[in-house]
Length: 419
Image 1 (cartoon, rainbow, N blue to C red):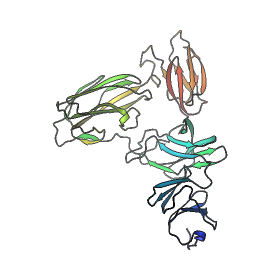
Image 2 (image 1 turned 90 degrees about the vertical axis):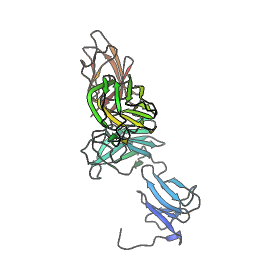
Image 3 (image 1 turned 120 degrees about the vertical axis):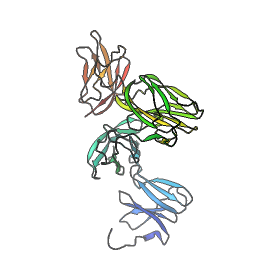
Image 4 (image 1 turned 30 degrees about the horizontal axis):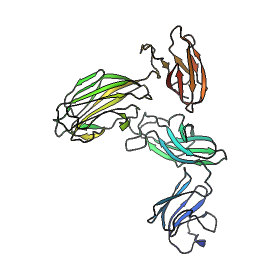
């Protein structure tokens, strides 16, 4: 970065050097004609850093700060990895992601982005957290992270929901019991519009289309529109409940293919695990019985139905020969916030509001005494007690933001605690 060059060859000799990187601790590494050499940036002696590395040219070096590793691409002997100098006992953040990995159209506005990291460490982590900022890469806003399972840590609340076009910067910090702190690179994503991907039939033909879709209150005899969005009727589907979807094409061609997806996780995307109907070469009709996942949250989402042709896997996005139709689905669960008059089901307790920042209520009949137990995601008991109609709530306002598990007389609910 200065005006003049200084020769730092020292004891390396006159061999070709292919690559150079510097870590955050001030160590410089060079990929040489034979192996890797390193030294503190102000030192005058290079040391061979070739533990288990074959003798060959190292063409490219990269540092992964989160995992404290140096990666080397070689001539003809593959890619190798070693720990950075002096960092072998530090926490290793080996993988970090948000809920929706960035693409040209994701993550989308209004879709919660939790940060998740896998951290390897032989001692005790005293703190794990995410720092973030908006539009400029100057971090400082902090979201704590909790250990959810094994070596996985997740933020207690999502990164902030910002307007379309906003750039969100963040990085993860892991602090070990020996005051050995590891931090990742800065990550960045840009908030995209909150829309589903575009899908349509092939408008050049028009002789293959969906004739009927049947699911609960939907019994829709449709026309050939290549793409249609039916916003009514709105079908209510309950978590853990089983339903049957039936789709009929206008022809009985043996190469007709059917696909249907429901956006169960409300991320404005249709993924393979959200398939509720799949019929390759199904002819004039396809039918399937599916169960709504337990972990859905109460929300209104889309169901996409596609009819395509020629044993070509139906895709939820893009253009294929046939037709596409969208429908509106209301997902409900007894564990989310609903008015007590919305549902009369004597076999289920109603828990509300959810998410909550404080009190959690149960709908309880006159003579019931209901035992409850609240646990965190590690399975540790937070509180327990007995509720009645006149004393039908408990207060979690002093608990940290995050996800808790509520057990009520054999029923299990996921409770989201907000700040």
